Length: 384
View 1: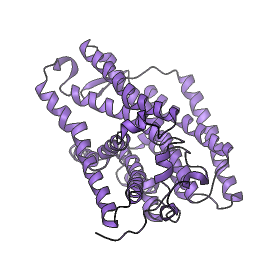
View 2: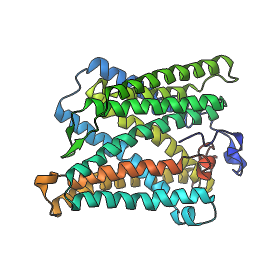
View 3: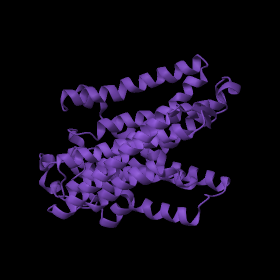
View 4: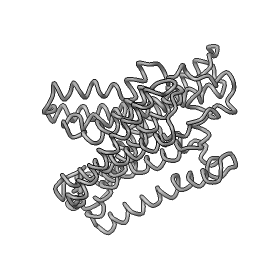
């Protein structure tokens, strides 16, 4: 999600009955506050205060399984459901601009083929060192994805509230996000030992000079001050004040979910769930508006969303757990070299990395689907 919808023409071509924003919110003030970032501030704050050492390993494992199944895995699956829906028309039709069609082809065909070749070559060549670098690539892209999503939520909320930021302010917000991303990733490589277990394999970090890490911290600190100054200026002089849910989402994403995520072991586990919930709030609004645009009755709009969510849960489980675990049981490979969960490891790397490329196309500036379905409200339709 980027500043794809920063201007009023986002409503062009949308039927009048759908063009009215939802009173400045995706759903409602409190729902948006909780899902877009505010809820994580409250819950993670309680975790830090009440559970400073986390929870026992058995409870931790059960919590991870529950959150993955209900929230985290579906958020990944939904990106596939949305991206590959009518993929032929998106990539090879005439509906989208040529540049956007090319992006769909690259993200939808070239990137997964490249990932398969990379991961397959590492396994066939029995190079566990090379394979494990896929984990570092995943962690690298995690920060990039978080930053872009947090910035995107800020822009979405600013458009809904008609509290628009200047181009200068948006540039500073992006630069600050990237600087915080670099601090988080460099800290991971700077702090970890050279080899750390991850999903049954050994995760290799890159040696980061202390000077480079210190420079990144300085850049992030200065850009943070600049971003805060932009928020203060918009608060004092902006026509409609600040889009507070978006501001909270932006600051929470950069600092609580990235820079200071290691403050508590349980926080580190729970943060991906709040990132996923932030994503799901936008996707659910998109699905509701898309269903209404197809002139489904009111019950049909919500039924359409329910089916979409259920399919996402099933696909998420199959992609992350069901299929790779089955393959780990039936395939014959060197478990002494790769450990007992090679297929799970590969599935995690593939889906995570590919997900970031899919989102970079779906939520970017100029994608007509986002323009049409994020800022419109499902019209009231008669029940079936």
